[in-house]
Length: 246
Image: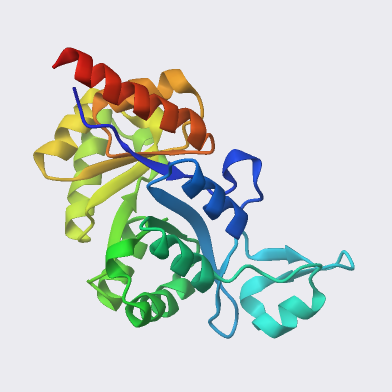
């Protein structure tokens, strides 16, 4: 029996708001090994949890997160933006890791600086990196761990074996330790190809138990889910099943 995958709490897990401290805390409380959040930077380089650059102010008008300073944004928002640093510290203090989903290239340098300053290289890795961004991360700081995000179009436009080959080649060329992809793309041949070259397979976003069980059986390294409690329960049962077999 394969080792059970790492449990990654998708931002907004268990009904909490996306990209919130509450989501990270809830994921950890329910058994997550990894907390995933989306990362963007304000104009003055402050790292915040946010999926989109576009932002709606308290008066209903809209603006650009990357085009304004943190102070300018918070002055017009109904509630302040969630800063990355305190969430990162709390996750590290809990002995867990963070998967930081990089949403723009302007995040890379300040993110590298923050991680190095806090001494948390072993507690953080980056996702959201297709090949050009993965190369940019390596050029900025080769010490940062990262996953290569799959180009889904490659698996639509290219024969599956060729898409696998290119994915693995790019991941290795960019210095990635694994690949990150929607679970629907995963097949045994992809698992075998990744395993042959030493790449971990991280999958997202899996919210139903049958799919969780199937992917765990295939040997993926991590499953990202909003339903952390379901995956954690499956992990406990998986351990019991393994004991029964021994």
